[in-house]
Image (cartoon, rainbow, N blue to C red; front, side, top):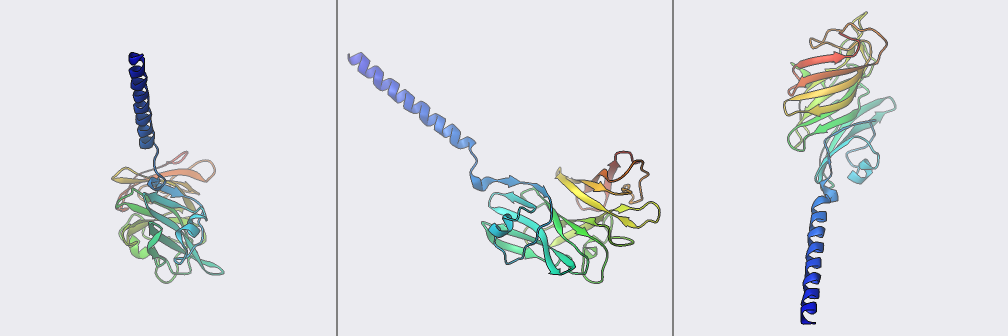
Length: 250
């Protein structure tokens, strides 16, 4: 009887230890809600203002990147009936850290629709442009970069990729990314679909209309109909495209 009582106590103690260990393992595997990480987000542009709360902006389901308690959102402000200007904002613990609406303030109908953030000091924003207008736009950040302006013509929507200081929202530099009409050299449409970063280079995948650009910015020779799935690998400072490719184009 004494032996049986000791055995029961031992088994009870052993079972409790097993349960405690199991609970510890489960607790270690379950990531808390605040540890969410989203490195890249490309999507439809949404409208918001610098006065909106994070909850209000998040509910719009626009592009955002998150690491821990910090988050960036990108979109546009409707400044007139026929003009949009891009807006980019950062929150820390749902408190606004900074908000920038001054990247492009011309009559160009610009928006923000993509972000990449490595969780540290590397942040890229993707913006749209429909032409060059008088005033401050991304050209002032694109001097000496791969493509320094929208180019000839106007109307077709192209992309602008900007390297941004995550601490204060300042644009370090930017490049335009567009297609080029083979017949007259005018700018044609291009829309970014994905961004990825390997620590040195930024890879951009996009839909490009007739025709995508080679690494030297000239038009590719293509067959078949557009849009083409186009991939360009930029150096991190956006001064050079190391490689550019698109199916059925050379």
